[in-house]
Length: 436
Image 1 (cartoon, one colour):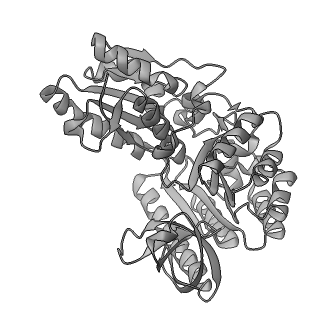
Image 2 (image 1 turned 180 degrees about the vertical axis):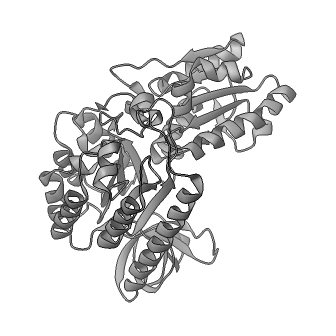
Image 3 (image 1 turned 30 degrees about the vertical axis):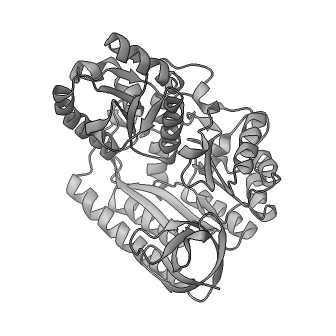
């Protein structure tokens, strides 16, 4: 059976990788990728419910597809990912034009489900959890890895932390790690394809337990010929081990960047969130990482307006931001996620106050980011070039070891290669440079 497939991807890099795997597996059935819903035979929504906004985008797009289904009854609509896992049968009950709901442990079955649904015109629901997740072992074909010099690799899925606000353990399941040998085999495959940067993914990546420690896994990847950069996300502060910190001191191809969500600077709020660290212990961790790698850049997630957050609690968050000086901060207004522990606690911070606090926080962070970027003017960095600049067609862009985007004039032949670039200007969110 042949046709065209379109995938809408919402949320994180893990969903991006899942979509690569789905495209690749459906290509084996003769399906070609399309970006035009009007011509698609199969439309898949790969969803996220970690934040309310991503879930709302999914539901909005599904509402639009209702009219497409009415106009073209033969089109197959499949919902997968976190919203599918969370809603299950209720999703089809609310939107009966959906053909299949596929949970987070069942992605490997999508080719089979597509065939079944298109041949029988029956609806299917697959949301069971399992002790082994076959899709973790799927490796996308080279043509679906974009850009071709950077490969994302799932090393684990799920989370055992049960932060009170977080839906992940309920929609992704408990932590399941891949065997380290399979991970290294995949790294070697990508290296043979010309990949230079390996980006390890997991909901709680530094709690990896695939037969060796996470630090030991990083050391083995660092030894693979051709791999010049290693990144990973997401880290939980409580699981950053001395061994992992030592990796930043000893592994030259481990990038000088760590994403380390802190969520709040208030010990009282952190306890209510079940985060298992404090303001002081987080700062000590930052200090230890900077001692191991003095130029390390930090990014993080934080939220404002969690239940019971006071003005004093919010000020502690601002104090933490000023103390750490993050390169990048992803900040959000708290919104209760159905099924979590925090959903049973009164959401007692008014929405207007949440908006005000978020605006104050983002103003401070924008200043810090600009100051950091301006401080890099005159410095020289190796930049792994990703492609043409999105805003200026006369430039190309890439990323420094700190994961900062640099735009500069250069030939497209540099894409996929590292260029030595001197920074000429620090901007609000990016750097501008010139090839040395």
